Length: 182
Picture 1 (cartoon, one colour):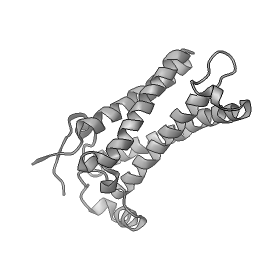
Picture 2 (cartoon, helix red, strand yellow):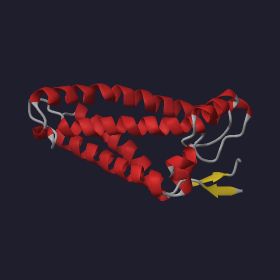
Picture 3 (cartoon, helix red, strand yellow):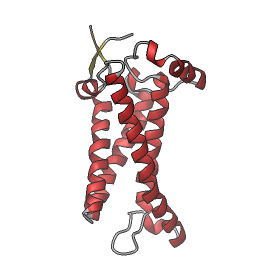
Picture 4 (tube, helix red, strand yellow):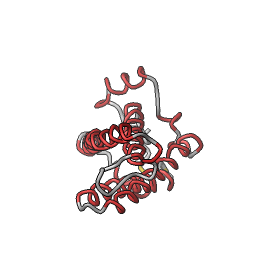
């Protein structure tokens, strides 16, 4: 039996996060800062949509559906290997989603105020002091490493589900459909 798990808004935001972050990284490496900024705007727009959709969207998209208390997370983690995978996010995955969204928020918002002191400044750079712009630029650069670490954990979890539980998490993020497991 198949179950519809990820609506088009969740899937589109996910693709925008991937495409926007990859594009931002590549364009930064190529010193194409106008394109880098537009890549950041794509991520920021998708982030805004996803945050709203997390409050009013379909059941599996709503934060209230998958962000559980620490007890539920511990119970899930302690018996992870011996229980079926949930159809949507598991309790630990709920916190992973929040961490990824927070890292994307830090990355995009600090970028709005950043200044490379050469040729490129974020559109809101003029709203803050030179010292604050320097601090936010530093955070923007450092927070990318935190974002990379979270993405690596995300990909590791996807691989663990594929190898250990034999559950495909990638297909449903593309099609929206999964095999019912719970």
